[in-house]
Amino acid sequence: MWHLFDGQWQNPLDAADKIVPYLDGSNKPIFHPLNDSGDHVVLINARDIALPGTEWEKRVYFHHTGYARGATWTLAWQLHEIDPTMIMRKAVYNKLSKNLLRHGRMARLHIFPDDKVPDSILDNISAQIRQQRPVPTRLDHYPQEQVDSFPKIFDWPKDHIIN
Image 1 (cartoon, rainbow, N blue to C red):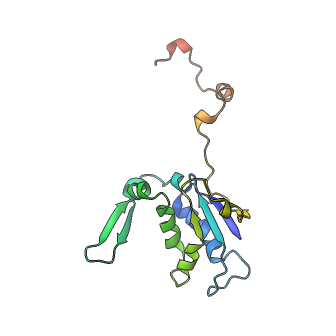
Image 2: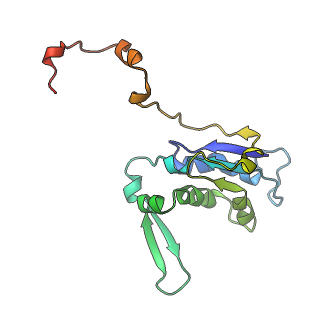
Image 3: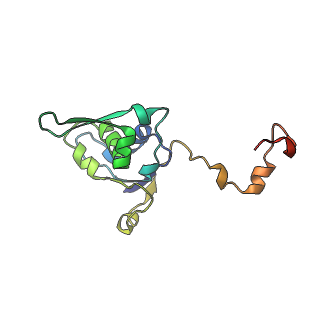
């Protein structure tokens, strides 16, 4: 099966916990740790993920080229500017079990930075994984009459408002 997961406003570490059972097949009744019976997961809107607190400035991702002095540490916001899909890819990769099946399971994870998915992949999607956090509605997306009818705590006269 192919599953769709929307990463908008989702914490990558919590989202990885939701995605991993679908990749390794542990959500199925025929699951066995030595068999690879997982499904494909299509993750959209990876550019709009939400790290909590000051994690954008403090979380560091490590990479090594394999050569001497080839170690690099990159902050989360820098890595996200370079490749918007990499933080989700690293989160899911680290949550998968550390065995020889991990690379095959990662091959079934398809990450897209926005909601533009090729039609060849969209035709296969048959289920959706529920988001953990609801996406809040921005204030400028509410109709003006709904904003005006919202109950106010203080009803200030308009001539007292300082611009």
